[in-house]
Image (cartoon, rainbow, N blue to C red; front, side, top):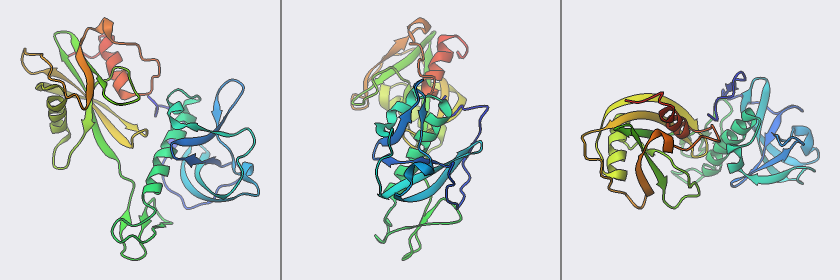
Amino acid sequence: MIQDIGPKKYYNEYHDKAPDEKGRILVYRGSEVLISHKEDGQIFFPALSDFSGCEMNYTYLFAINEEEFYLGEPVEWTIPETYHFEHVRQFRLARPRELAFAGITGHQLYEWYQRHIYCGACGVRMHRDHKERMVKCPSCGNMVYPVISPAVIIAVTHNGKLLMSKYAGREYKKYALIAGFNEIGETIEETVHREVMEEVGLKVKNLKYYKSQPWPFTGTLLMGFFCELDGEDDRITLEEEELAEAGWYSPEEVPEDEERIALTREMMTRFKKGEYML
């Protein structure tokens, strides 16, 4: 999965520090990132030295091993030679994996900072804290920390088949599993039952937790569950605003996982190989 960057290690502790000449600078423009490619196609990000003579604000983000990454927010600048902006969706396939993970995780933090420039309580411009990753209103004292949205990925099985679906109205057109966000006041297990009922009109039983995954593309913490259909009536009632289609598929019909970055596809592959069947 995209966060599996071993043997390298991701360190997300916040530090109030400025970049040195080796610090990697992540510059975003909406859904785009400033990036370049080596001759072999691998990606790399600019260093502080690439912005000599530019006016830019820097915020420490995280480190991977000894390499530090900073959010760069230009004030007066010129795009460095050999660099250009690309859509962050390219991180789904980009290599090396640790830089793809850094790029999309940095974008998640960039979006959080962008959405909290002003206080949601009184409208005053927020200040970034120097001790922890937090923004604080100097007027009313409102403090805001990064918000992570919990969600579930659900592999429903029945009579040797897997329930797969396709989203409605999204760019992603491949098969996926039932998924949805946790709501206030419910357990994550209750989310599983509710989402399956809402999207395909089915009841499930025998929930088995599989594993979790941070998914920076949507700022989500995904939690995967395998479960069984409760009963023998497998007729699907499709929620057409959420799903374009849904159906029961044998292991041979489950597509291969070409990207190897998502919890959803890993769970589908486990079923395909017969490694996780209830």
